[in-house]
Length: 308
Image (cartoon, rainbow, N blue to C red; front, top):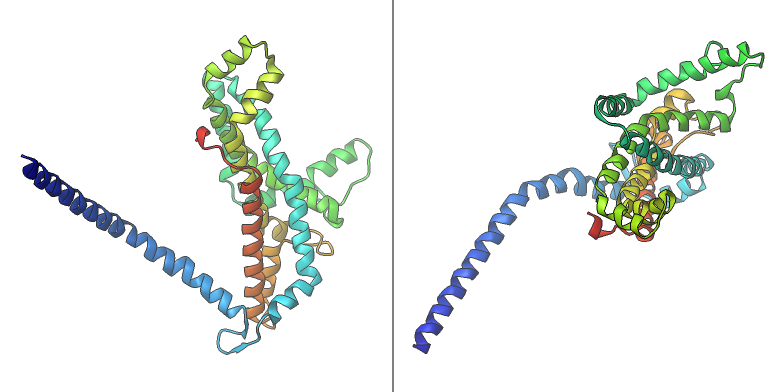
């Protein structure tokens, strides 16, 4: 009886082992196309970019120069200015892109029926408008000659103001344009997060004597941690990758006061006198800088798996 039991156990173990091998093989076959695409369109271009960034390359000839391109990039005042501008964009835009949509999401949450659907649809409209169209719209708003703001200032008896002539005001105009484009989906993200918080949490807090403000501090904000992190990472990467708005609204001026790293790389790529190795070195620096900021965000604001 015991031998039969042993043989039965061995057969079951072998059957499970065979099933597990088949499952692993099936899983590998299913992810193989994705791995191939990842390797062809991501990993291989990345390796090639890093390799060519160490050369003086012009698509036809390549000469190894080591870290020369990286040294030139870090010594270039325009490239450093572009990174400085990106940090300014991040410091100003990202908090606005989290706090104001969070407050507005509370207002939208209180709406019911047709009004709620209408407001949500209206909020999302700017998100589907391209950066080119948004730039044109706000250029008309901030225009010195016939812009809406300057017409209002002139009607009120004030002098017109050339927003695009000064670095700070030009940056504010670009930030406002970007904020307008991203306000809708940030609000909808946060509205989804608010709707996902169980009512029982608020009921328990109310029984403990917490008012509206304390419920926001001790219930809403902790439960929205993952949504805030999502908006933070999206905001950082969006500001680092921004090119359309400064290119169309200010061309990076005045005095490179609004230029971004991506716009600088684009300008260098368009210049036939600049080595493509240098352009790739700037791109690699940009990639590692973006990864570093994103990693820092995840390190200091660790996502809460219990809220997923």
